[in-house]
Image 1 (cartoon, rainbow, N blue to C red):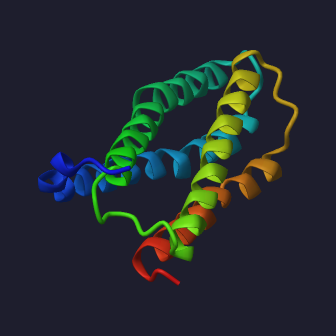
Image 2 (cartoon, rainbow, N blue to C red; image 1 turned 180 degrees about the vertical axis):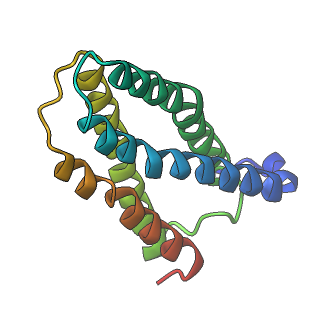
Length: 149
C-alpha cells in the first residue's frame, strides 16, 4: 500500500531519513566507546558519575530521537510510491541489518542501565568489540541501499 499524496515529498522524506540515520549512527558509534572508558573508572567515583551523565544524555537526547525519526521517515518512504522495490534483495538485506541495529540499540540501553546501577559485568575488551558492531551494520545498510546487490 502506498500513498500517492506522499510522492511530491519523496526527496524531503529521503533527506530527513538520511540526516536522522546519520545522527543515530554517530551516537551508536560513540556510546560503546564511552562504555570502554567507563570500564576504566571506579564505580561511584566522580569520573564514573560523569560518564553516567554523558551516556544518559547521548542516549536520551541524541540517539533515541534520531532512531525514532529514522524509523518515521523510513516509514514515510515505504509508503511513498516507487521508493521501495519489495522484490529486490537489497531491501531485505537492509531490513535485516536494521533489525540487528535496533537490537544493538536495545543492548546499549541495557548496558547503560548496568553502568547506572554500578552493576557492569562486562570487560573493557567486550565493549571494544561491541564498538565495531554498528560500523559493520552501517556498512551493510549503506551498500545495500547504494549498490543494491
